[in-house]
Amino acid sequence: MNFLSFKQKLKDFVVFNLRDIRKIENRFDLRRLNEWQSKGYIKMLRKGYYIFTDIDLNEASLFLIANKLYAPSYISLEMALSHYSLIPEAVYGITSVSSRKTNRFQTKHGEFIYRRVKPALMFGYRLENYKNYSIKIAEMEKAVLDYFYLNTNIQTEDDFAGLRFNKTEFLAQVDRKKLQDYLKAMGNKRMEKRFNKFLKHINYD
Image 1 (cartoon, rainbow, N blue to C red):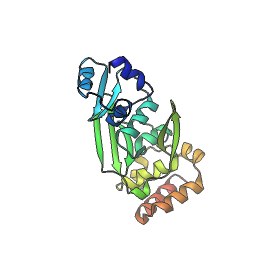
Image 2 (image 1 turned 90 degrees about the vertical axis):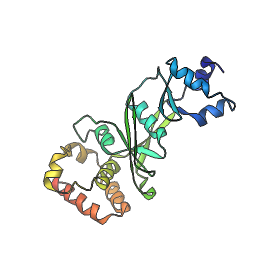
Image 3 (image 1 turned 180 degrees about the horizontal axis):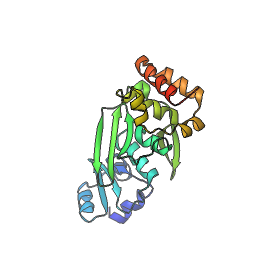
Image 4 (image 1 turned 120 degrees about the horizontal axis):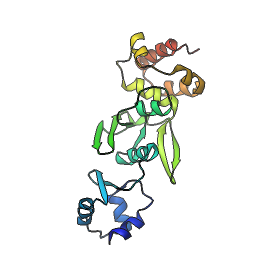
């Protein structure tokens, strides 16, 4: 298979892996991948995962890459908080949670960071459509809860102030019942106590 034929068959893939390749050509010669990397046609993000070099990289495509690069996972934590305009700083790395072990992948297009949660906590995300694919991203309420769940050092008034959290945006968007249902479902009393202190800090009634 030549490169033009290969690209045509995978043209709708933002990121593709060896399984995707085997679906279009069961006897595909993997040496072609090294050859096409040398020629600058494709780039390897991690072992077995590739993108075309002319891909349009934007927030949505990077989110989709993050979902597929280490599955199951969904965008959450700092990246989701920034997406929902809840924190002011630009975020270093595409942050996700996963039921697999904590991991990170450094690429030329940024760092993809994954933090582990129990499989039972892999809920509270929604699907955003991008080029006929579905991006998994935490709902705003779950993104905040995931952040507190994994950052156990956030405990005091000074810690809360240091987040520079956009409470106006949060209070305007939050689904209060969903927030409480998710908090209860997470089943972590220590985290619940810390989070309720935070809600008091932002004047959440």
